[in-house]
Length: 385
Image 1: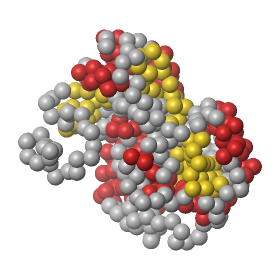
Image 2 (image 1 turned 180 degrees about the vertical axis):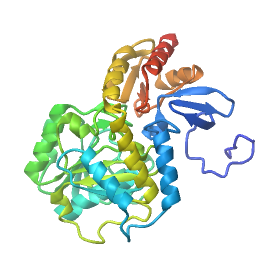
Image 3 (image 1 turned 90 degrees about the vertical axis):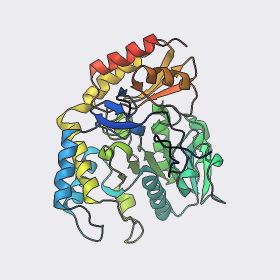
Image 4 (image 1 turned 30 degrees about the vertical axis):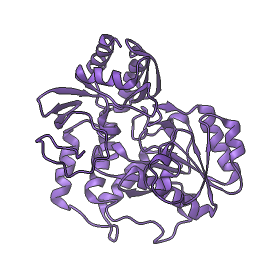
């Protein structure tokens, strides 16, 4: 049966998304308004993308100013705004990463991270973790849990070994002289906001160094302040060889980035990476504005403080435990998460599902306030399933 739009006409969109019966028409700060005039408190941020909520004045100003100055130019020419964005991102990120490459999305960032590792190490195998989600394009989908249901390509482009999360012994056995890279999300998002253990992260650094493989941190979802640190790498005190990020990096404008150590950057030549839209002036102006806002408004300390409140105070009603880090939190529920999400939506709060049927995922904007935490806690107290 053909999907219909809100006016009852046949939709021109491919019917490949499971959508809530909800049409969002506007947003301001942490609030969204639908086509029926209902307001919703946004604890999901559009898959962790709306990092500063909607209509943040710094982002609007940066976008308008850059659009008036230069709307687009490619990587075939130098752009001061691109160089500034790269410098700000490298300074914001973990010490030990020195160069940046801008792309359009998290999947593209991860594809390029794998390409860098394989060009540098000339090895055929990649190690990933159970429950991982690295994207839907050909190479990274080969590393994504559950992709056999939708992969679509006749074969995978590399050998892949998957080890259980937090199993150091299994990781040690999986490593070897044919491994180009170990890629992991320090805090797994789609799997249900699962933070990888500190012991495992440090073992990953030691083992990749020992075997001469690249350690890649996929911080597409957990990066750019979401953990209460610039990147989860800083929270763990470990610097990878390559770090990817996207989603909230420009607050809603499509952009991704690969950050690389000097040792891996030195192994790349001209023409080995490419992108048409990546590093465009609008995206780069917004990257600058995002980092500027996080720093000037001291948002990281607020994330750490309020996430501690969320982790403790949300264990009420249908929630019996919390997991994750910062504003990438999972609420473990007695009832199916789908039922809890529906009850929350009926009470004016939007949150997200995950790959775990009993985990509600919270990915609120960094501009969240104490009063919004109070509203969520009160909402959960009202839910009885």
